[in-house]
Image (cartoon, rainbow, N blue to C red; front, top):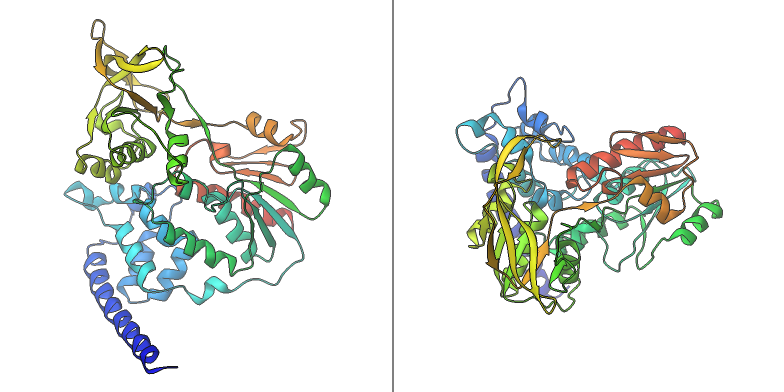
Length: 435
């Protein structure tokens, strides 16, 4: 090794030492805020019921490796999750009643960024000779792969696109989730022996081939929810009316995107927020239109604050009733004002149109971000699964013989942490079934 290489190695080592000292000090300051409640509201607020008090306690006791082991049990992509999880635990924290809740996301990010990977991550059970096929490399597919490969199975993930990560890379912009982070975490999964076959679309024929090969003891379908919901209003067939998910996919795949200057984004979730922020970066004048108030927005408060910081306009309690076009090009939106009524099935107040409150606004592009949909019937149709087989339905996954349907393609659009939970529950049954 040359002197220059030795010097660089030494400098990097010293830099890492310094970074770790700063990280330890910051972790001490943050975790000291935790009250270690007897009835932890943070656990209640987490869809997966992650033991946050125990996690924080381990850090306070300077047991950083133990804390990392606990976090890696939850997710094989810890840095990614710390950046994009809505962290409803923070909103549920008792500290949030008088200010900010415990910044769990920041604590996770500091720990996963500065303290490496626990040795237990690479410990695998003895290979049992059985193989699992997973269709889709999004968060549910990745967690299922991690759980099964750790349990002794040979695992292959089949991904339709060239880029691995599913909606983590196709739906979330680079400025919110840097690609190098998720790529490095997927590379780490490859070191466990998980095989990835990208640019491999599994249609009916390919699916039947997987089944007939006899190679796989079980197949996990984790293809997400990619069918956009539409408003079903007049003028929606204009080429200036786009679907948010397709828009974000094109942007993230570096495809050429053409949008006109005045953009209306319809919706109030994180997809709507991402769409609005991308549109602004493309030079548009952007307004978000949402049919309820800020309190009912399904998107995270953190992401909403980013939208506000970027001076993107938001019109609450308003919804389009017609897209006004000329020569099939969008010119205006006909809108109606709303008021909030009694709660609907979602538990949120139902938006009720106010008679005589119609008005028009000039827009040139409309991007619909009102959600995606899926159903078991759609999955059955895509893969040619026989509905007459023995179907077992759980809250967050379905089982047909040795085929498991998990994540958004079963539940509909959800958060990453909910997709992880779905994968965990399905894999628990899968492992028990195949013993």
